[in-house]
Every structure is written in structure tokens, then in C-alpha cells.
Image 1 (cartoon, rainbow, N blue to C red):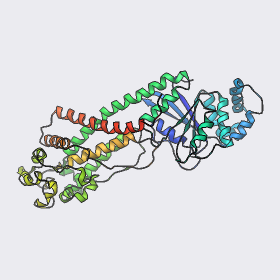
Image 2 (image 1 turned 60 degrees about the horizontal axis):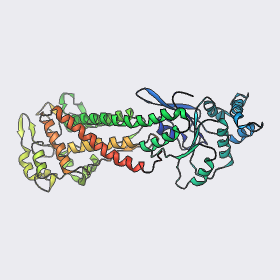
Image 3 (image 1 turned 90 degrees about the vertical axis):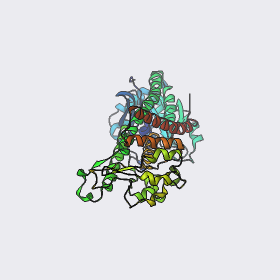
Image 4 (image 1 turned 180 degrees about the horizontal axis):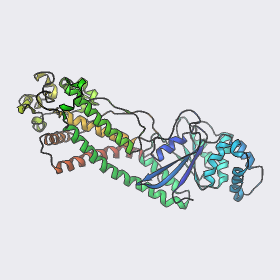
Length: 468
């Protein structure tokens, strides 16, 4: 056997074999389709951490003529110890590669030392063809596990469980469309018990996944902190304004904000094995002051009225100087207006009192050589809510998922104190008072936010995952 575990994923076509491969090796490039025969030939996928090969899975087309193959194997009466040699004889028989191409493809890596993951969706009662498949796999003498993929909630699991127990060392249920780390670790622990040669590497793989996720949490927290600072403090030179946007610097800034967000999200998706995931993002940086203040339009930002802080008291102190804008070298003291705005329960709705439609939240074009940064006090909250929500959803997304990843930001679970803290950090950032300690505090805050969100989601799944 190889120094790393290698499994051949087999079973009848259209049972979810490729979905399980995709989730286990964290690779969304594995072809998955609802039609039968998506996998036409063997394809090997490897899982690595820090360039170290830890697990290999070979996705196979599945059995097509199992009863005929079993009949050939049983033509000669052999002892159980001789059955693996009988399977090798089947592979060596002239003409079998042409007559039984799918069976030959899937049996060759098994007889070369691969373990077996037999996949069934248990959608209907076991048939004679199913039993023939299982009997062929038993004849190989290789370590083998059966996995029930619960595609259909009305599956006949009990009958399948009883049948599978007669042919396989372990039988487990694993849903590749919902499985996150706890479920994957549970399956790996069961696979580790199939043979002593794989106990240590698969146990270590389970541990390395947990360590990798901890390191990933620290890294992404720093990335999100840098991104948030860049967005909150983003200013764009008017000299780079495209001709078509020369009379609309706000739209130009909006495009730049969109681009930065999309680049971050796509890079995270690529780094985490979701490079083929389609993102469904709301282009939400509507910087018009009326839209910023109109709670009916906040859904465009991925937020609703109840999700954001109606600032009063201490929050007013935190945000008061944040929304003071410099225009043409002078100070446009919106703080004077915001005394009633921020200190009252009406929250931000008093924006209607501001002079002019655009005047206030973005420095006016023509009086500066740049546009930005956005000074609206809701903006830092929106940027952070969108980034955290996307990261959480991507983190928990199984690689077998092929639906669009839709962003629906939530900030309503932030206590008032934390929202005020974000406003205070934004104030320090935009006033050029940002220090290394602020950056560290922001990274730690993001890490804690993600940790708590992920902990709650993973704990719920762990309760239903098999444990040693």
C-alpha cells in the first residue's frame, strides 16, 4: 500500500460518488451532475496541506455489468484466500477491457492497493445488481467501507444498513452536500480503522484539518482587517476617472468599492478550494446620501433597518467627528447638524435635513483631487457585516455544493458596544490616527466574531456526527 491512504470511490452510477470526492478533498472542480454517467473514466484527486499529500481518492464511473462480472468470477470454485487472485485473472483476461470497461477501470486501482468507499443513496431497496457489486468488492480482499449518501429523505436506510453490514467492515452515513469539518473528521476516523497501516495517517489528517482551520482563522482575520481598513479609508484620484464617469465621481468610487470586495471574495474562494463557485453579490455600495439614509433601501447593502445601530448617547460621541467632512480645505461641520441626528432615537433618518442630495457623505468633485472616503457612519458596519457573512458562508460551504453563493449580511447580533467600537476605529482610521495596536485589536475582534459564529454552526453538526 501507499504511505498515504488511497481509496477508490465505487458504486452504481448517479449515487453521489463525485459529490463525496469533492467534499472530502475540498475541490469544487470535480464534475457533478444529476444525469447518470457524469464520470466517464477514472479520475484521481489528491488532498494536500502545505504541499504534503495526505489522501488520494479515485473517482470511478461505477458498475455497469456487475452480475455478468460476478458470474465470470464464480465460474471456478475457489477458496476465500484465492478470490483476490481470481479478480486479478478477470482483469488480465483478453477482451475484458473492451467488454467490461467500467468494471476493469474501477477494479484496477483497487487491486493495486486502494481501499474501497462504496457509495449508495439507498433510494430504493437493494437489488441483485447491487448485491453483485458488493460481492465483487468483497472478493478483492481490500479494506472497504460503505457510505450511505442520504440524497432522498425517504430512503430505505434500514434495509440497506442490514445488507451492507454483511459485505463491509464499516457502514456510515455521510451527506456531502451539508458536511462540514466535524462530519468529515468522523468519516476519516472510521476510514482510519479499516487497516492499521492507515490508522496513523488518517488520524493525523483529522488533526491537521483542525490545525489548518485554526491557522486559516488567524490569516483570514488579518486579511479582513486589512480589507476593512482599505474600504473605509478608500479614496480614488479624480485624475483616473473614466470619461464616461467624469460627471459622477460617486459612481466611480462605487465601482472601485465593488471591485475590491469582489476581488477579496474571489481570492478567498480560490484559496479555499471554491474556485468554481459562482458568487451572487448585491452591488450594494449605493453612495447617494438619500439611499444611505433611506432604510427601505438598506436591503441593497445586504442589511435591513433592524440590523444597524440607531445611534444615541455614547455612539453619538464616537461618530460625531467621524462624519465631519473636509471640503476644499475647510471643515463642513456636519457634527453641528448631527447633534440632533445622532443623539436622538430617530437615528440616521435626519439625513433629510442635510443641504443638497449628495452633499455630505462623499467629498464633492471639483473641490478636491480625489473622491472618498465614504464618511457615512453606517458604512463601516456594512463593510464589516458583508465581509464576515461571506467568510462564514464560504467556510461552512461543502465543496460539493454547486448552487450560487448568495450574500445576505447580518449585523443585528452585534451588541451596541461593538458597533460603537467599529465607528471609533473608523474615526481613528479616517483621521490618520491609526496605530499598530488598532490593527491588532481589529484583527482579534474579527477572529472572535468568526470563531463564535463558526463554533455555533459546527457544534450543531457535531451532535449528529459519528464519533469514535
